[in-house]
Length: 424
Image (cartoon, rainbow, N blue to C red; front, side, top):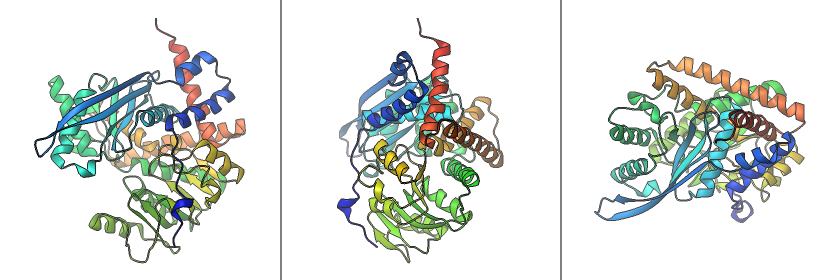
C-alpha cells in the first residue's frame, strides 16, 4: 500500500504560536484576567548558548543550544533535552510551556522547562557526543540544579547522555548530585520503570478512556507514528490488551499490514537491522502517509506538527492519542472535532514520563528507592486520576479533552501565581 507524498506533507507551523493559541482558548473559557495572561503567555527565562566542541579530527565546531524555563510557580523547572537538526528557540519555548501544563494536569509540583541543541547526533561519534553533552551542561549550568531545573531525556537523548550531564554538574560542585537530572541508568540513581514510563502512562489513559467511553480495545486496529522509546513499548502494551498494530512509521520508513504485526518480533527486527523497513509481511508506505491509514486508534509518537488542516480530514481513526508533544495543530483539532474524532491530548497522554521522572527525583533526594511494581502502581494511580479530572472538566464545560486539560492545568498554575503574588 502506498500514499502520495504531496498529499500528506504537513505544514510547518510555529510551535510556540500553536501553544499560545491553545492557551488562549482555555484562558478565554476561564475568563483569565489580562495580568495573569501576560505572565502565563510568556516564558520566564530563555538562555541561548553558542559553544565549541572538539571533534575527533582535531577541528573545533560551534553548536547552538537553548534552555528555556516557562514557569516555576508550582516548583522547580522540569523538562527534557533534545538533540536534533530542527531544534529552534520557538520550538523549545512551546515545549517548555506544554511541560508547565503537563506537570500541572497530573498534579506534580514542577514547572515547565525544555532544552535542546541544534545537531544531528547520528553524525557524531560517541566521544564527540560526550564532548557536546558535557560542554552544553557546563554552558547551561547557571540555570540547572536539583532544586532549580532538572533536565531529562527527550528526542535523541538517552540515559547515557543524562549520566554525562549529571557527572559534569557533579564535578563542578565537588560531590555527586543524582537528582540534577532524571532518566539516568539505575547504577547512578535512576528509577526502575523510567524507560517505559511514557508508554505505560499513555496505556493507562487509553484504558481509562475505553472504560468510560465503552471503547473496545480487543481487536482495535492501531497505527503508531514513531517507533522509538515511546512507540515501541506502546505497541507491545497495546498488543497485550488485544489490539492489532497494523501500521508503524519511523523517520526512515513506514510499514503496513492490515492483519497486524507481532510487536515483539518487530522490536527485535529493528534492534537487529536498525530499521523497521523490510519487516516480513509488511507493505511500505510513506512515513507521513501512515497517519491516514485505516485504523481505530492513531498514535502520533514522533515530533510536533504532524496532523494539520492539510491532512486532518483524511484521518480515519476514531481516537487520536498524542504520545508526542504538539502533534496536532489547532486547525486540525477543529476539523477532527467536527468529524467526531476524539483526541486525547499530549499534556495528559504523555505525562507518564515526567511523572516517573518526579518519582526518580524524589527517590534521589531521599536516597530510598522503590521497586518497579510500586513505581508502576503509583504511575497508574496518577494517570487514572488525571484522566478522570480532565474528563469531568470536559463534561462540565462541554469542551474537548484538550481544552479541558488546558483549563485544569492553567487554572492550577494561575492559582499558584496569584497566591504567590508578584515580587517585589
